[in-house]
Image (cartoon, rainbow, N blue to C red; front, side, top):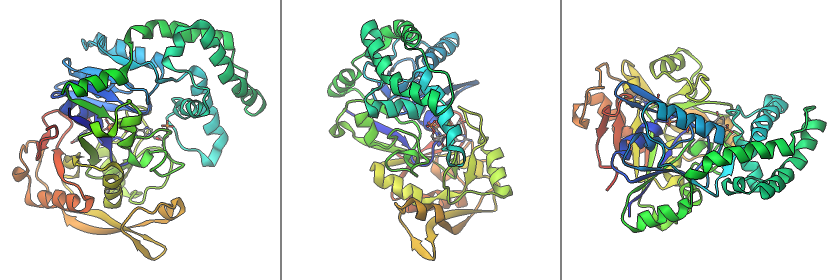
Length: 428
Ligand code: GDP
Ligand code: IMO
Ligand code: MG
């Protein structure tokens, strides 16, 4: 019953989409467990490139069953747009299963996301504006709308009324906006429910049965460890648990069913939105990484902030997620650098920290302590074994592995499916 969790080890956009697609060729189910359409996962197959936001990246593999778990927040309009877009390109989405307990992102969540960010001013988080935070806030406040609520008009009306009661007061009195109409919102949600219905299922039961029958399930995380609402750089985080534990709460599968936890890390680091980032580069090397790595957001198109590999972050990700393997991506991007700095520890007010400071004020003050490795000039995109990599490149990977407290089992050498070096198998 292999249950494999795949998560982002840094601040997102590590290449989880590509890694999921790759492993997806060998699994029976791929289940998203957190986040919503704030995610942007790119998958490149031959000449085709897919940008997935809400659908599991495994959907590109026709033999597997894609699942949206209860921990995901679902914007039905976005879901249908994504399904229509993929089906127009010949990808069958009819076998998609959506949890009846997943929470819905309603239009008012998107509105609230935007007005609260504006209201926060200099304290803003830099969200994707997709309504993620307000939808999860409603879930925790117990005024959320769940997928199964969309199938009962009276019940739904009641729920929307409860949810909008306080929001309308805030919209009118605090944000100077028009109130949102309960009847109209209920009507719109009922219509969306009609189209959603064929996909809706008891996904917890389906996944547990599959695991009991010896099938392989891949749990695909969105966002990343450092964006986790509990373990990340709070408050500059998303509103869900992208760490490995989220795979259990976000799908209804118990931790004893998880056999492997794979962390995806870039060979350097990027971040989108606000918040501290110790190895961020503000000089021409940051711009160089952005251009070489095409570091522009899949969801919002925003330029990503770029910096050197941060081993403190990776060690922390190994610890928080209980990583068994790392997939190291975008190693090819570093080709051409004379020297490559690696952050091995932080200096916080003159004190060395080898571990992640939990106090966010200390983390914000952290200065990277670097060691430097020699670079390489050779094109590595056609290397298919570790031994084919230039010696200095091998040494860089080995050093990252040592500093991360976890073995590196696959290495990305380009965006394509076959741009990968397999060091250890990821699924047995
Ligand atoms: P995700 O959010 O973690 O799925 O990552 P994104 O899809 O947002 O960003 C990763 C980007 O890097 C995508 O454009 C991928 O196609 C690309 N990518 C993934 N792995 C590699 C790699 O090993 N080398 C290069 N050059 N690009 C890669
Ligand atoms: P993938 O899955 C990178 C960031 C936003 C913002 C913060 C909160 O592609 O790695 P939210 O809209 O979630 O309330 O925004 O989280 N963020 C991401 N950054 N990759 C992502 O997803 C992200 N999803 C959210 O930029 O800083
Ligand atoms: Mg992304």
